[in-house]
Amino acid sequence: MEDLIIHEHLVIPADELQLFFARSGGPGGQNVNKVNTKATLCWDLAHSTLLYPGANARLRALAGTRLTDAGVLQITSQVHREQGRNIQACRERLRQLILEALKPPTIRKPTQPSRGAQRRRLNDKKMTSDRKQGRSSSWD
Image (cartoon, rainbow, N blue to C red; front, side, top):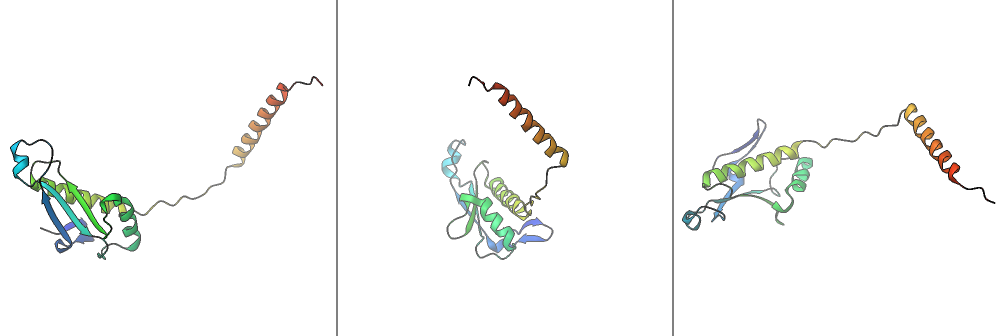
């Protein structure tokens, strides 16, 4: 297996990745029962130092159930009938997941309503109050 290039500054070495194969479900006739086409790509995220802590935490959150208790990220593909295409699908999914984790979260900047917006809100409240006051009966 070859190194997984995430982008020009981040490459996962091939010795950190493991591939496992199993029989795939779904259509395929007799081929399904004979050939191990399902691919599972494993990456030991707990012992890898490639990602900085913030990206590592975001990747753990994004991984969800694909992350084992031991900290191993498992990506599985069985959509294709060929083992090579399933391997490429696993590698691309891992790459996309890491790219998503590398994006820093957007920080919400609290804003204040404008003076005109405050005036309109208070005017609407006054109109609603007047409307409801007009409904009350004065049968004392």
